[in-house]
Length: 256
Length: 261
Image 1 (tube, rainbow over the protein chains, first blue to last red):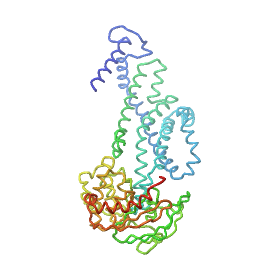
Image 2: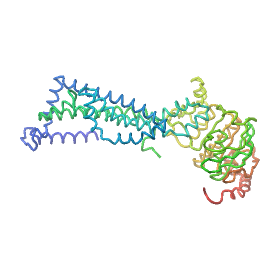
Image 3: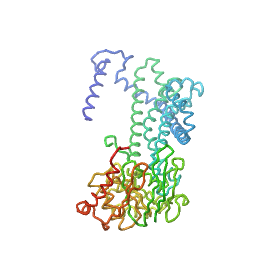
Image 4: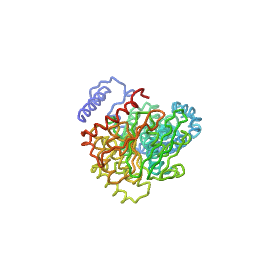
């Protein structure tokens, strides 16, 4: 399977290279400005890396994404728990939360730039904003869907409210939060990059927009490639984490 | 511990009168089975005894005396009660070992001692080797065994059982009945076992209380003459068992017939 995949990938790469004027064939189905040639993308990527800009941009974007992820997760859990426990508060705020959640995330970006400036803060906030709702809704549902029979079981065993929280509510809510972690990680990255698109002075998104403006298509593709690799790695890491933390859960195929 | 139920009535505020004028006794170390059709308030009576019915949920009349003291004055059971549910009700995020240790953890028993007790019980019901399995990885019978020993682990004096073997296949059910009898004969806990299966009630109970439907009340109490420890596999093949079953069935079928709620 892996072999087949590599073959397909290789063929696609070669076709791409050939149709953009590479391999010494002289076919130019696509203009290099429209579709960059893979070998030139690779060369540009190397140049980008050697210049030291790549590391700087990557650091800026990842810092924004991680800070956004962190504060989004913390805030989402906090507010989710609060709403989960105080049903009245939740009932009052529910329409507002739903409305905010259905707002396309990108549309708040211009305002965040106005509020927080072109620096990292606006990216962190946008990233936080996208992550927050995923975690918030999961925490909220987690608190709400605590199995009352398990609470009953702990009470019968002689457990007080403290034990109910420790033995039932915390693990139950955690399982919902862990399950939302993978989505949150990719949301955080998207939030940071989109924030940079809208207005910034550094970062991968900034560099990409700059390159596109200069019709430097190779650079645009190079950055896309980097974002893809970063995204896949982060999601894979969180998937492994989730798999370990939720190992007590039946796999989907095992569900009765 | 001896339990005396006096003129117990439970009326849920939603309008359903679950129990009316229920009176019976369960002696210390006695094994009593309650049998009745679905919707006769069998589970409600267990929940009432376990004080799991909140005052804002239902109006409770009559008295439940445990060793002569009303359960409401005792302010709960302080963990001297065990309750085995129909759904195994295990913590899905804990292993078999972790589940069995739960009650001891609540009692703040030291880790080593906790594990020792749990492992001994795990061995007792033949679950050795499965200590580190999660509930979803083992069979329904094994889960129900785990649930049973989770209750036994903290050594409650009274055990309430709400159709604990109801979801199991016939063979596993007999095996678990045998195990329960073995454990009970050795430890002599007071057991109140609810079931809708008359054969199961006769197999296990020293006495069988027949419930009538809605509002649930005691219709009849039978003394089961077979000596304990009984062997369910042997008992089910015997003529005495068949005769007693047929005898009681004549009354039971009156209760069971009719509209399913």
